[in-house]
Length: 198
Image (cartoon, rainbow, N blue to C red; front, top):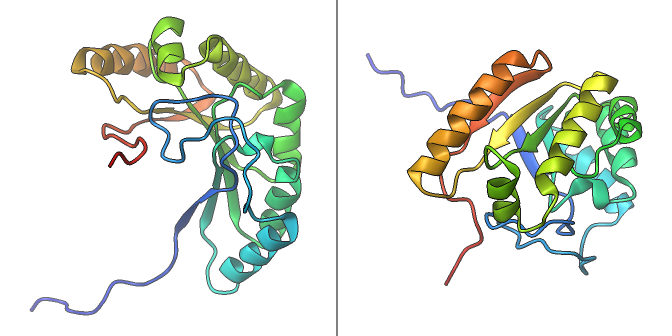
């Protein structure tokens, strides 16, 4: 007999775009995040209230993303508050702003894992997708800083390009991640996630 009971309604994950501000201009960005700051974003007090409301009924993973979440001056306060509330705080960043000092702040604030997007097998393809020269080198420098600090991270790849690009990127970074003991996960998002075009 088929079980017709509804699935549990437990909230398991929240992808929270804490800011639209960004230092890159990526082709795939849903938020069309360039520069900033932008009016109407939640202030610190409102962010903490939101975490209170979430923690009152569930304990999901909270992905702090953007834009570039590291552009929020209060990001450590937000992350640490969520961690104290029993929420699993993680971060999605483009990696270019991550130094060893920033990586240590991630750990101190209770960030459990960080994802860094890599969108090509080399600087030419990645920077073309990110629309900023030096983005590839910056992301790799950020990854190295997290390695030194002991931050757990994973690669994310958003191939919004021809199949050859996707296949080359998948082969290259699957091999690299397999050699990288710190990279716990390699994830591919083989769908278009760019801004809505009307």
